Length: 410
Ligand code: ADP
Ligand code: MG
Image 1 (cartoon, rainbow, N blue to C red):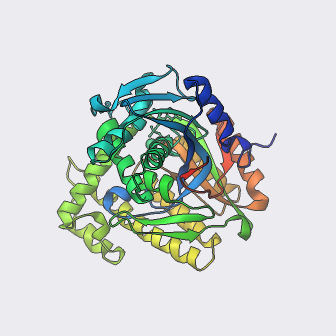
Image 2 (tube, helix red, strand yellow):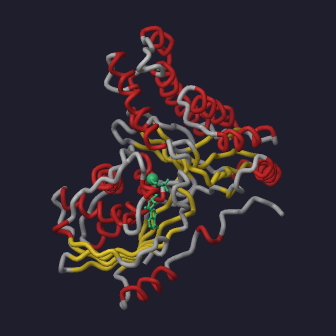
Image 3 (cartoon, rainbow, N blue to C red):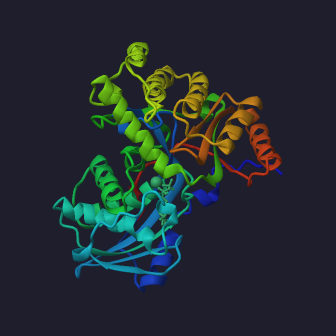
């Protein structure tokens, strides 16, 4: 059996099933239907909270929301992907109730998922926007907790629906900021701006080159198929629990490094001055990793710029070694890989991949593999076989074709 799935039909399920589900849940037709995608980050990992560069692309996997506004301030939330039925809240009584970030959102009890869309309503109202109640039903094909940003897809699809229903006239970038505010302050997850921007702003056939300092962005053509290549996503289906505390540690370590170097953020350390910066930094027993963290961020920002240069020159194959170097940096300097991610990357490269790296926060989730079209099945089969031989659960492997960002479907 071939382990590789194409961008599965299941990735794109269209508006009709969600419309039907909304009718079944609420007994009437929705006012509209919206979609927002999951994403993979091509390069630029953990740079977004260092004012640096990122380069996500939207997946065909989407979260679809059917929504109707309400005039009584009631907020009813329902998900085809969550247990527990309708969650009923009121816009006047929404209060941030950050979940225990050490436990992480994956430990969310039934109904806790509703904090993501409720947080968007809260963030919009907190910003003084005239948003009232709503009935909402979502269905998603974005795997949750796989590092593919199902949380941002859920937030952004909610934000876009409310933007249209309440005629707010907000830009995609502003919707992304409100969605991030919801996740940071209402849900309590200290994520950067990348995931929400990807869900809101990506376009089909492109990766989004985003400067997270000033939020300027540029769509960079990324038509892998036209160059005889494929971008595979390997969802390892594991998430190691140390992830969230380790994220906070990395973030604090980067801030410590920037302070020690006297710059606002590590983004401000030019690649050409990395060696000097590393000489200027001293690791201490209570902060043993500052130099390595700084080295990752500075080299990673540089890799993003190199990737953009290759893509602008029309040479996708040339980014392979940069992806692989990015993995080594995340594994060795940032120390956020894990056995499954390393196995996926090492096996893919040994089987002939052009480049491979872990993507997302780390300690599990997904890897991306750039591979010749002709070698895609061999590489997929090799990764699946290596996981079986190591006693890991079977990975889910699919092709990432850069899809559109958030949009209205009906
Ligand atoms: P990721 O964003 O990488 O998928 P997170 O831990 O940030 O992982 O977000 C996953 C959480 O988002 C889930 O545990 C759930 O609470 C929520 N979520 C995302 N999509 C949905 C959905 N369609 N229905 C219900 N909850 C969802
Ligand atoms: Mg998330």
